Every structure is written in C-alpha cells, then in structure tokens.
Amino acid sequence: MTGPTTTPAPSRTRWSTGRMLVIVTVALLVGMWVYVLYLAFGPGQQAPPDRVADPTFATRAQEICDAAHDDVGQLPPAIDAREAGERATIVAVANQRFTTMLDDLEAIAPAGDDGRIVREWLDDWRTYLGDRADYVDALRSDPDARLLVTAKDQEQITEFLDAFAKDNRMIACATPIDVT
Image (tube, helix red, strand yellow):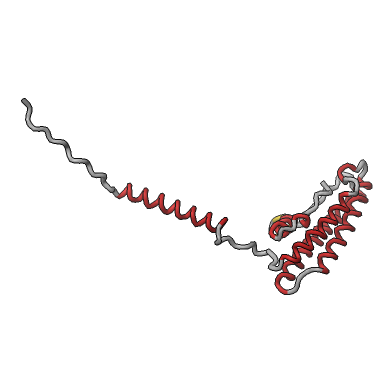
C-alpha cells in the first residue's frame, strides 16, 4: 500500500525583472502607436501649415486652374512634336495660358497671412514658368534640351507647388504635365 499522495501546490508565476521590462516596453510601444495614430487620424490632427484659412480662395482657384488645364489640353501634346521648334511653340503657348491663370489667381488672392502664403506660392509658380520659358529658348537652339527646374530648399520648386495645391485641395493647380 502506498502512502497518502499529496498534490503539488500550483506554481506561482514569478515576475522577474526581465519579464517586467518586456511588459513595460510592449506597453510603451503600444501607447506610442496609439498616440501617433491619434495625431495622424484623430482629433489631434493638425492642418497643414500652408493651408489657407478661407476655403473660398481654394474653390475659385480650382476652377481657374481647371479651365487653364482644359485650354492647354486642347493643344497638341508637346511630347508628340516632331521637331524641337514645334515643341517650343506648343510649350510657349501653354506658358502664355498659365501666365493668364496666375494673373487670375493673383486677382483673387486673399489678404493677410493667407494672402502672404498665396503670393509666395504664386511667386514659386512664376519661377517655374520662367524655367519653362528657359526650356522654350533652349529648344530653339538645342533639339535635345531638357526642362530644368529651379531648386528651393534643396528640392525642386514643383514639390512646393504640388504640396500647396494638395494641402488646399486645389489639385488642378498642381504642376502641369504637358511638357513630359
């Protein structure tokens, strides 16, 4: 006969220092991602710094830019031009239309801080149009000329044009793709 059997006492989980560090680290990482997602998608999301406070400008600008792109879209594609001179002429006509677009946008630019931001964007656009004009001049003497875009803060100025247009929901006012 065997003696009384004893059941072993349930073992306790020990909270070692390493286990505690892993739990705290995981909790901190989860907390960090919750905060990041809160800032990105939740009420903590900040408006872009170049967003114009009054959406009236953006709405009207979208219409003006859309009309300009429609007009330029009626031109033959510059990329399909058989000769550099023909391409230069097409781009020059498009440049004239974009210049008119900028004049129209300048006429509706808001006042105050919004106006300052809009005018800086329009100045960048005029710089880009200058690059396009230089391209037209280069094409007249070099059939292999390339459109060279001015740098701003170590990026192409078109990055700033496109970011402003995107941030203000004026996609038609982004960099035109008629040259490529």
